[in-house]
Image (cartoon, rainbow, N blue to C red; front, side):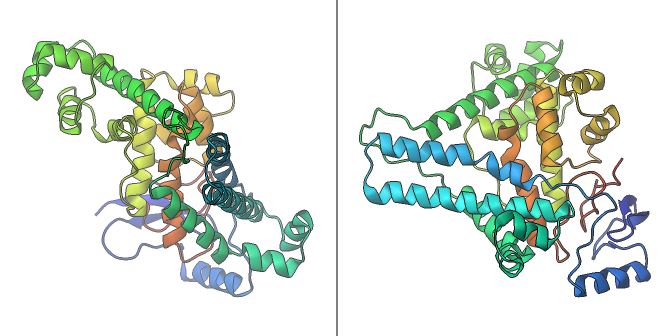
Amino acid sequence: MSEVKHACAFCRRGMDVRQGPGRRRVYCSTACRRRAQRARSQGQRERSSQPVSTGLALSVAEGLPEEVAALLAAEQAGAALEAVLERARRLAREVECYVAAAVEDGRRAGRSWDEVAAAAAVSTYTARTRWGEGEVRRLLGRRDRERGASRDEAPRANPGRVSAASQGEHAATERAGRALAAALSQLHGDRSLQELARAVGRSPSYISRVLSGERSAAWPVVEALVRECGGRPEYVRHLWESAHGLAPRARVGVDEAARRVHAAVMGLYLAAACPEVEQVCKASEALSAEWVKRVLAGVEVPDWARLSALVSALGARPGDLRAVWEGLHYTLLATLDAPLETLADGGPAPRGAAGWDEGE
C-alpha cells in the first residue's frame, strides 16, 4: 500500500499517510489532535505560522461582472419588472457571497473578529454571527448550487438581441474550442493523418479538420484520438466540455475534484505547446519554477490567485477555469469537519486528497 506525504493539520510537520480505504490521518500524533481539539473548543482557528488568503473573494468577485451584465441586458431589453428584480436579487446574493468570502479570506490571513467588525462597521457579535464558518459554507454552497443549475438568460423583448452574458458564454466556448484544437495538434506531433484516421475509424480529412478546429468531434472520437497520440484524455476533457457548452460534471469527492483541476491546467499547458517552465515563470513575473513544476506534476493544488497567474501565463483566461477550481473548493467546504482549510502553499492538507503536499 503506497504512502503520500502530507502535512499535519496542527503543527505543519510532514508525515507519511498510507493510501487506502478508511479515514485518513490529518494529525501526526495524538498530542497534536488533542491540541487542535482544545483550540477549536476555545473558538480558535487552526492556522499555519504564516497564514495566507484562500483566494475565495477573488473567485467570487470575478463572477460579479456576469451578473451585472445580465441585469443591464434585461434593462436594455425592456424586460418585465419581475425579471429585472430577480436579476437584482441575484446580483445582491452574489455581493453577499463576496462579502462573506472576503471576511473568510481575512480570517485565514489572521484578522481577528474585532478587526473584521471594525472594517465592516458592525459589532463583533454581528460579525461573528453573520460571517461565521457555518454561514460562509451555507452561502457559498447555495451559490454553487445556483450556478450549477441552468444559468437563465436575461429575458429579451427583441429575439434578435443577444445578452452580454450569452455573448460572454459564446466567447468562452470559442476559446475552449481553439484551445482544444491546439492541444490535439500538440499531441498529434508528426504522426501520419492516415494512421490516426485508421485508428479512430474516421477519414484523414475529418481528422485534419478536428486538429485545425474546423470540426467539432464527439468525445469518444477525441478520447480515441488522444490515446492514439499517447496522451491522457482527462487532460483535454475540460476543454472539450467547455467547447460544447456543457455544464460541469456532477459533484465528486475531493480526490477527483483535485484531479480535475490538475487535468484542466494540463489541458491549457498542452494548448500552449508545452512551454518550458522558465518561460511560464517569465510570462507570469511572479511564479517560481519549483511551484510551477509541482502544479504541473499534480502534487500541488494552487490557490486561486496563483492559478490565475499561471493560466494567464499560458495565454488563457483565468475565468475559464474558475468553475472547475470552485468545484474543488466547494467540495472541501462541504466535506471538511474542521475549519475551512486553505488551498494556498503552506495550508493543511485536506483529508483524503491525494497529491496534496507541504508548501514550499
